[in-house]
Image (tube, rainbow, N blue to C red; front, top):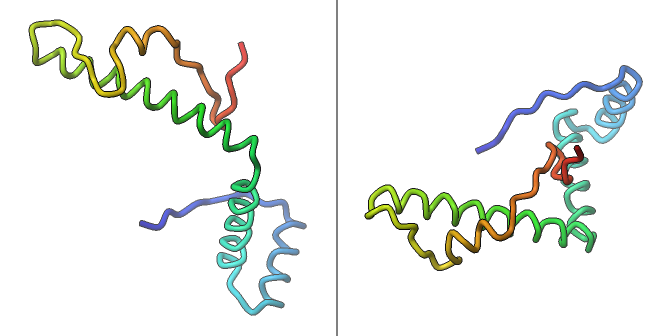
Length: 108
């Protein structure tokens, strides 16, 4: 399902974007879509991003395991359940790292 975004551009940037879109005979929204697609494509080829994505995925998996075990224990005799991804103890052994909105590790 498509998502609608609102962005703020400086007047000069907006004017340049509008002119370029007109020259290309395309709506400004299509020019923005092309720019976003190009940004995503360029990021996919960066090895350092892959390492960060793998770390975030591991965090998600640990959180999911903890939540799954918590839900399962609600319907059992109170003992934490073991899941395919590990046990609750495994999830607690590796604390969750906070991340800011950009996905970077949060600083205190």
